[in-house]
Length: 293
Length: 285
Image 1 (cartoon, each protein chain N blue to C red):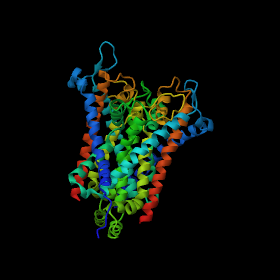
Image 2: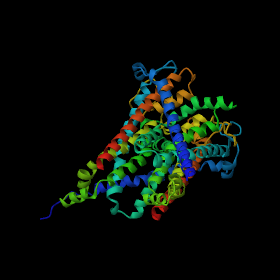
Image 3: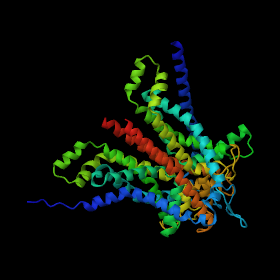
Image 4: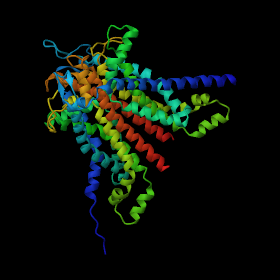
């Protein structure tokens, strides 16, 4: 006698759909960004959009859509935050993974996770109200909200990403390596510097890249911290505007379907391309690391 | 030799100092915010709407708005997230491995897409293209997309941690694949899946930029309870009150109060997730 069984194909179909939804969403993001961004370039040539130094989208007579100030603003803030956060993050990760004893680890690791859970608007508020005040009192800056303020708050925000991924990478180094080095008479510090860290190198790179990706896309904290004037500058004490901030601020006041609306989508597209590239590099690094083991 | 050891000691001492320095900066910031915000949290503040042209009153409408958006996000994100994780953990043999590889690539990529880009998708797709307008629904759909990668990755990990012997025992007793997943694998992975969902939701409840673009309002006189209407949320309220209020200094206490409420919600969820996870990890060992 045959046992009759319920057909499970509908369930499997539903599960398959939820799995490929990730591809669908990624596709939708790309399609909608393209669809809404492309009309920008009917009126503003791509070269002018990317290299134009003036962003005056709502000027009545002569609106300008040069995104260079925004690209430069993002670059300045992100690069500075990475320069600040990477050394600090590495040191914290090394301390947590290799130096702190077990009980301290149990306190520090959740503390880092909690740091990662604080919403970006809260960091933004801290930068706007507290950090800017501190910076102004110390440096007597002309602009109360400036690139340095944004970079500092951003570095605090990307620290958890850098710390937790770097720490995982250090923990993943086979114990034999360390033991061999210690047995040869190397101190713990020498072992760390010459054996553990080089072996964890690609994992550390992934942590730094992911931190950078997060910094590029961060919106609220940067928006509230940097003062938002679209100027091309390399001065950390000037007020700057980033790509993310301009989209968040100006999308609220545009006429849907206008050139300004499309230009904001074009900036979104640029942002997406940048973070997508970072993610692909990370993915590549992780897979190469997987093969090497 | 002595020299090497003393170098090591001072280097390690410096590392310790720096790490605890970072921890104390964060602790001081949180303590400061709580010390300013906790005194504001009266029953009246939590249960009354904004008054005096947003210069006074409470945050009831923002609290309800955030809860409603989160509730609807749960409805969309959790079934889809868990479904996806089940497929990736249990059914990968059913399809071409290249598809699985692409799905994983897509999930990793989605996790790195900035939230403002999700906001643009929400505006383009839900608000305008599907004509759902600025609404709770548009915002929840957008947030559910944003939380999916978090939920999928962590749920899949906990499904994979269920020992293979459980599955084999169930299959050997004549259960089908889905019966095995439903009755054996899912129950034992449940704590991990719950952790995953809480982490995803905690991320969503603090999001601000996507809400600005999909339906958060600066001010509403009352809570509509309608998913096709605009809403006020805690995160956007903090932003509006500190940057666009007619007098940000007068409303400073409201800002601190709102931040503390949001932090209590987000941090409680995070800590619950961390505790559940560490409890079950210890039990598994």
